[in-house]
Image (cartoon, rainbow, N blue to C red; front, side):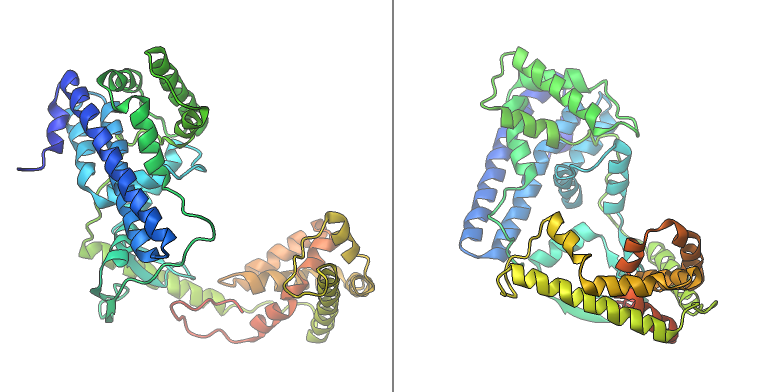
Length: 428
């Protein structure tokens, strides 16, 4: 017995539709079974085992989406064989599963970019963007959930080796939810994927369709809606409107035009990323060292204004606690009318009076310090120049609202930057 899924690429339509109408319901049945097991394990608080089974359910359900892409693909053997081959790729299956949960993907071009990103064999990441080099995120996440392994840090050639063991995932805050791809695969099977005639209808509508980069989801949904209407006209009945809506909103763009490769990293890829990392770290350190010009406000004024802001913040917190019945853990939801009263507190009046006595140069310096405290990599000259350009256009309320960061910004400006350390944020 051998794997023969690629053979489907050469089948004539009649045989292709017949074979898939037999296989898709079997895949859906297995995916639903795996998902039900994940749900049961979740109820029993076996969260790691539940997450593993949920991952398997995603991969199994994704096979239906891959086969639907095979149906939507034009009669090009090479392209169809490529799509069929995704049936066995862990990364490809996870990407198809993820694509069902991308409701905010605006266009086909945006989806292309995300898929390209997910297929990277290595990538730079961390709080400073370049702290470490990681292997493909989908592969790493999958394997770290399943296996104990002995691994090496890829960030530099002499990377440390260590044992990696699966952790125990925390439960979500709500009840167990089936993956969207499982729900979608079941809905598509019921909507025509379990009959030769239904698959033929889908093929007729989609094979002449090639998504353009700027095509948005509104256009995609219109075509999906037309497909479902044609299936209904052919005699298919849907149990409820919610199933139709789910398919319209969650069936992703056809991905047969795209290249989805299982990531296989090469040494030159690693070397390129290491060079990029070195260049970026050098830029971070040079940027962090810039301290000119000095802020046009004295430390004593910054301290006084910061103390006044802290006093007002304390009064606001006291009011919120009082509304919650004095319970520090009580619900502190407040109406906009109640929030507006914060700005009528005597402590805010004192703060605003102090602020209004500042010159425009001092205000610009204060604004820059507030922004500087929050920047991950602090480019002081650029931030200060932007503050000078913006201070006259920003209202007092916004500028005073930066008060939480004034002191931290000045502390950061006065402190000599240290050497770059991976994982350490550079802001205070």
